Image 1 (tube, one colour):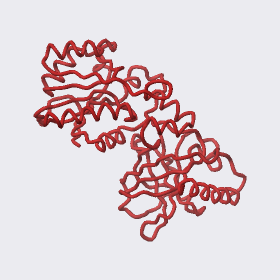
Image 2 (cartoon, rainbow, N blue to C red; image 1 turned 180 degrees about the horizontal axis):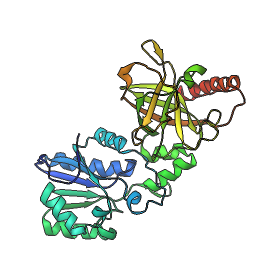
Image 3 (cartoon, rainbow, N blue to C red; image 1 turned 180 degrees about the vertical axis):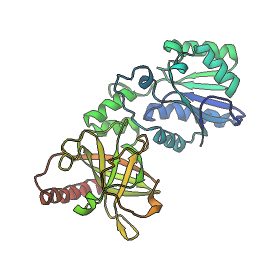
Image 4 (tube, one colour; image 1 turned 90 degrees about the vertical axis):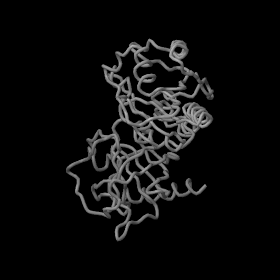
Length: 338
């Protein structure tokens, strides 16, 4: 999949560009249905299936006081779109200047003149232009005027209404992983990159991959059975979501520590440090570092949260913590072997 950053002039030429427009945070079942229609249409017309998305989220720019974590980081979103079969993704930078564009200007200057769009797909709640003044009816009117085809896709119904990113965020925050996963069409997950880190887990006999999270939503604090995708392979493991109070009692930086079962790299056991791709290398500079297999550095790690085992808590001694970790591992293996 080709990724194009910005809506400026591009050397890429499309023979028959068919575009889906939206943020697509989570790439949930509703988004997937829209994108599948996009791809079917593009193939039928012998054209290109293109997604136009926006980053950062408009709420982060226009209402920074509102806490709105992403379901999927931009790199994870792009990965999911590619897996669905999208030919190209245009990532438009959303800033205050862009937010003041008139709806007709957006359509005429960007979609018609620059991309030369032939067909457009949007969801039912799509709004665009200054003050969100453009809606589906207006888009249809402009399509007729500028000579392209408009498709408004109705939402997929869920248990109590349509599938939405807002509901999925709430479900993850509440710890309702089964329903959130159902609406996503896959397990709740975080994508990160392998970096250096401290050796605390290694010294305890449970080497870990640490993912420091900034703006992606996490399930409630606690220990989870997880599946991990790394370098094209799948591993079973367990993860702690929280502040690690036994070692950092005053910390308020939420992160994830993952222990992979039956994993080794060269002469070293499974000690990895993964940092969320949206977090620009923000990890504890005071941590002791060590060298592991350099081939791991920069590789992506995908952590899928399968089931919660217990709440996060403080341990009075290291032996007590190690004994609990052994119990957590047995429980995780039981859950993942079902």
